[in-house]
Amino acid sequence: MSTLKFVSWNINSVRIRLHLIEQLVMAEDPDIICLQETKVRDSQFPHEAFEGMGYKYRILNGQPMHHGVAIVSRVPLTEDRRHDWQDNGEARHIGVRLPSGLLLENVYIPAGGDVPDREENPKFGQKLDFYERMTKWSETLDTPTIMMGDFNIAPLESDVWSHKQLLKVVSHTPIEVDTMKRLQDAHGWVDVGRLMIPAPERLYTWWSYRAKDWTKGDRGRRLDHVWVSPELRSKIRAHRVLEPARSWEKPSDHIPLITEMEV
Image (tube, rainbow, N blue to C red; front, top):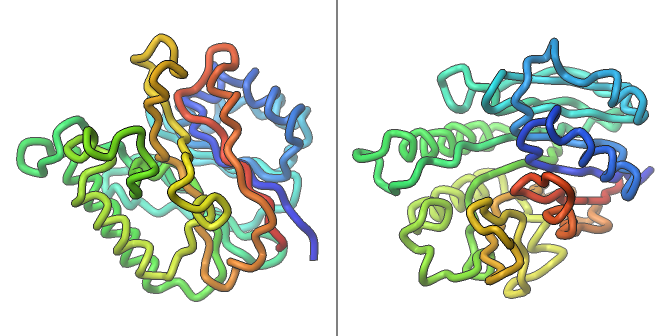
């Protein structure tokens, strides 16, 4: 049995921030990278650059301007699953099978707009419905699975800079937290972040671009997650977030999650 190093990162345009991925690879040398919000057609994906970094295997679900997900790997990938949990054709999921037989799911869940009300803000309803479709899918899973990506919900009080001030802010509202809990319970998903870095320890993965200095006030949220099937819990060897990446040149507003796991 070998150990693989996985990275999950909402890169916010793979072409604009290719230099960040190169910096990440130099520093961390991951085996598999799951990217969200790639914002590029499959035909325009920077294949040559990833080939040069040693990522021979690439499975993409791209889209111009918005959305898009990709899995690049140094180990063989098979299958190419694309669930339309948004139910509107948006490229928000890509799934593969690893050589060990494990499934790897890379997902980019909608942010949900600014108003936490289904009637006033249809985007919020779409986000909740996306979660419900994922919940039904999770109930049918019969293969050990790793799922990672931008889930756009920070569920715990210690996952946000101010629980009290964010209770009515999309990403931390009670209805979102309850919806995410139903998804987690549907398969018994293990939250790797909080398995390895237990609450109430501070753990953020996103800081808004609106703050000129993201470190001032440290107004972060844990919107990005790695979950595994219950039987994989004992296979996790390490998990951390690369917080310095938020200060790299022309950064994404998200930082990479790094997970090491026996497969």
